[in-house]
Amino acid sequence: MKIGIVCYPTFGGSGVVATELGKGLAKKGHEIHFITYSQPTRLDFFNENLFYHEVDIRSYPLFKYPPYELALASKMVDVTKFEKLDVLHVHYAIPHASAAVMAKQILKGEGIDIPVVTTLHGTDITLVGKDPSYEPVVTFSINQSDVVTAVSEDLRKDTFKHFNVLRDIKVIPNFVDLDKFKRQRKDHFKTAICPNGEKLIVHISNFRKVKRVDDVVRIFKNILETVPSKLLLVGDGPERAVVESLCRELNIYEDVRFLGKLEAIEEVLSVADLFIMPSEKESFGLAALEAMACEVPVISSNAGGIPELNIDGVTGFTSEIGNVEEMTQNALHILSEENLESFKANALVEAKKYDIEKILPMYEHAYETALAGVLTV
Image 1 (cartoon, helix red, strand yellow):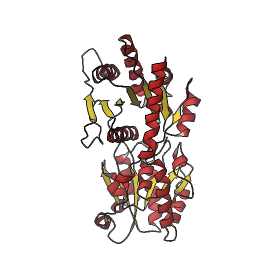
Image 2 (cartoon, rainbow, N blue to C red; image 1 turned 180 degrees about the horizontal axis):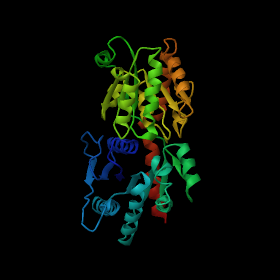
Image 3 (cartoon, rainbow, N blue to C red; image 1 turned 30 degrees about the vertical axis):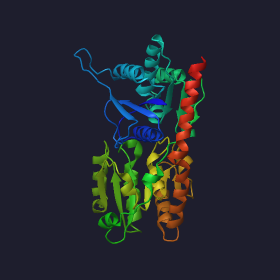
Image 4 (cartoon, rainbow, N blue to C red; image 1 turned 180 degrees about the vertical axis):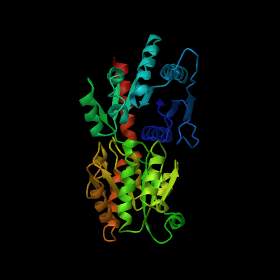
């Protein structure tokens, strides 16, 4: 099957999932065409079934903002026609789904009926999509897609709650490549960070307020009072300066490392003892899944779809958003010598349920369903 994949080419969850999905499908023999404004960050290996088409964004004095949605729709039309695509799979509702629906209508006028599969990832629904400025377009785009999927049951429910959706939404969870994330201890790396056998705590995010990285720092400060530890903060974003200042204010800066954006996060996770995700909103929690695939238990909030992944008392613990004290006590419970190994083992068992080899067939079925629907109309 020839599949066009449209995504944001960034370190964010939707872009990572879309890229890894495309790579996995290419390995299975499908021809994958990525359509976006720059090469996806994780599109990092050569495969004869992988292609990349850059969206050319022109700037004209007339436009205050370049019309990316129009350029994207035109590129989808072009690639669909000349590569003879079977399906367009767009990740993130704004503006990808609306651009795909526009491309679909243009192609229909030329006698080409291309099915559109839309995957909802989270903030396209829970934050941006709810904005009255975008809600009518998001609703229309979802209803005009041939198949719609969401990455968690919580996101599915949220979509029905806030939009007048007239069609079914299939839950296909995010996934992890277990072969890539198999725990391969790099003890020399951990020794460099934790020279005296300290526990290693990790947080990965885009450092936006919604991720509550300041809570991570406060939890770590509390842990440090009982258990010698180090904290690795992976990622970057608007809250980084605030978090750095907080570390200095709490006098723990020497025990915290800011690593910035990393592609090979499995190398960090492979030596971690605990992962912290106290987010306000998290439709799935892909970074937590990647940690669990490396046998790292998770301390998290109970926001969004996280409890579907992080099983309270089994793979880690979930708490109310902002409950730093409870998260601290749960972290200390996990880090105790009598509990740590069992939580690590449980994390891996749960992560295996989300192996890419189990999720790929779900997407293949979604494509077949979309294609069958178009052919029978």
